[in-house]
Amino acid sequence: MIEFARALRDLQVRTGGSVGQAVSRGASRTAVYEALAGKRLPTNETLECIIAGWGVFREVSKWRALRRRTEEELSEEARLRGEVKIKETAEEQRFLRELTKLWEESGCPSRNEWGKAAGLSPRTVSAYLEGRTLPAPDKFTDLIDGLAELCPHDEDWILAQGDTLRGEYLHQARVARRAARQEARILAMVLPGGQPGSSGRSS
Image (cartoon, rainbow, N blue to C red):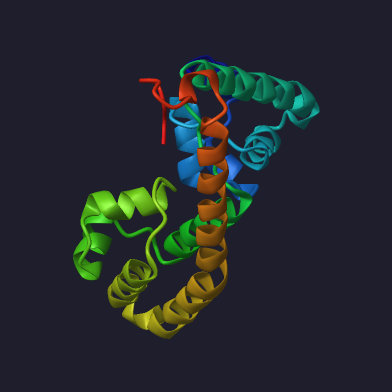
């Protein structure tokens, strides 16, 4: 993943590309930063937004192939350790995209400000915005109420957007996540390091 990120940063230098250009094509700002930092392998959709934003869409096939090889290598390493990585589902990606869009359209308040208004820690708010954790419905309500409090002029609009996010995107993301976890538990039982009694077993 670090090698993939290094190649992506080299491309950024070569093209003079910016994070903003990728975001303008529909990518999440957080997802682009994480891809460049080697914290997370970007989805194909995010990768294509980066490539298009930096003006080298003719190279998209090459980058798709590189991403696929990287993902396969990461999966093989995890398999040999008896681990099963739960992939981020398409539903989770959609939820994160919509949440990030709402945050950006609300003026990008800081995690500290948002957390204080919502009664949540800045770390928790960051985990939601970066897609590391899916909020429980009650925590999501607190999150949206806090954002509305920070933006009183747009309060009704933010609350309405929150209702849509909670009723559609969050619900679908949580259902998809449960299914992915169940699939991972079943797969872990058949991996070399995931057999009962093995110290490398991952739940």
